[in-house]
Image 1 (tube, rainbow over the protein chains, first blue to last red):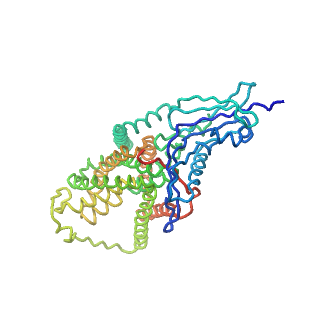
Image 2: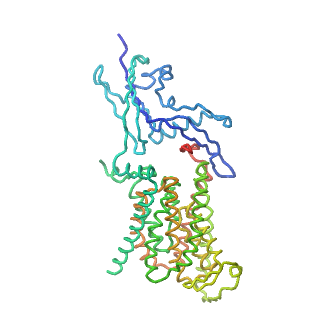
Image 3: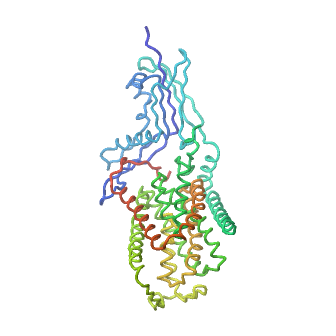
Length: 199
Length: 312
C-alpha cells in the first residue's frame, strides 16, 4: 500500500534586507553594539502542513526547496567583525515568530478528498503590502512529488492604508494635515472649554 | 466579534495594535495632571507611550504634533488677556527653529546608528531626574516652611552678565532692554529638547524666562506657549518628512483624552494646596524616571532588535 499524500503550503511576502542589532552591557546599561545585515528575509512567512512538518517534508527536501522558516532567512555576506553571525539570523526568525509574522502551522491543511484540500492563514495588521508568493508542495513519505507556485496581491484596506501611504509617499501633505488637525483640535478644545465655563 | 476586538485599534504609523481605552486613559491621566499643575505634560506622556510599546521614534514625533494642539488651545486665553510678548516670542522662536533643526539632525544620525532609543531614554532619565529631584526638594522645603511666617524678599533683578552682552533689543511688553543672545540660546536648547524628546520644553523655558531673562511672570506662560506652537509644528514637519513617524491616529486619541482630562484636572487642582500638588507631581516624575533607568540597567529579555536597512 502506498503511503498517503501530504500537502505543505507556504505564503511569503516579498524578501527584503533587515538590520539585526545585539545589545551588550556597557558602562552599566544595555546598548546596541554589534549589528548584522541579514541580506534577505520575508517580512511575513507562513508554512502550513497536513501533519507534523518533519513527517510531511524530509530534511533533504526542505534544504532543496527551502520550505521551513529558517530556510527562508538568507545570510550571504556575513561580516568579519562578528564571531557568531548565525545567531543574528536566528534572532530574525525568533522575533518575527513572537510577533506572529512567521508562522509554522502543523495540521493546518485539511485534505477533503484525495486531491482537494483547504487551508487558511491569518495575516497580521502590520504586514507589508506587495506581491506575496504562495507555494504548494505535494509530498509522499517526505519526498516532494509535485509543486505549484502562484502569486497573491496583498493590500491593506481602508483609512489605515490611506494614512500609511500618504505618510510615506506625500510626507509634506501628511505633516500639514496632521498640523491642521492639531490646530483645529486645539481651537475646538478651547471653544468647548469656554462654553462649559460660560454655562 | 467580541468586545476585545472592538477595543483594539491599529495605529497605522506605529504599526502596532493598542487598546483604544488605554490611549484615551493615558491622554486623560496626563490631561488631568496638566490641568492640575499647569504643565504641558509632554515629558510624562512620551515615556508612558514607551511603556505601552509605542516605538520611541513614533512616540516623540507624535507627541510633538499633540503639543501643537494643546499649546494652541492654551495660547488663545493668553492672547485675549494680552499676555504674549510677540517680540520676545519671535527671538526665542529663531533659536527654537535652529535648535529643532539641530535636534532632528542628531536624532536621525543616531537613528541610522541604531542608538536613537537609547539617546531618547537617557535624555529622559537625566532631565526627569533633575527636574523631579529639584521639585521634590523645593516642595519638601516649602511644606516645612509652611507653618513659619512667610517673609518674601522681593529683589530687583541685578545687573549681571546678561546686561553687558551686545545686540540689545527693547522688549516693551516684558519691560526689558536686554541682549538677544540669551533668549536665542534658551530657544536653541528648548528646540533641541523638543526634537529629541517630544516635549514643548516649558519646564526649562519658563524658569529660564523668569530667572535668567528676568521676564515678568504675567507674560511668561503665554509667550512660552506661543513659541512652543511653532517649534513643535516645525519639529512635527521635520519628523514627518524625514522619519515618517507622526501617527495622527495616536495623536487624536491622546488629544481627546487630554482635553477631557484637563477639565477635571483644573477642578481638582483648585481644591488642593500648591505644595501638596507639587510634591505629588515630583513623586510622579521621579517614578517615571526610575522605571526608565531600571529598564536600561536590567538585562532585556530579548537582546536582539530588528531595524530597517538604512539608505533603503
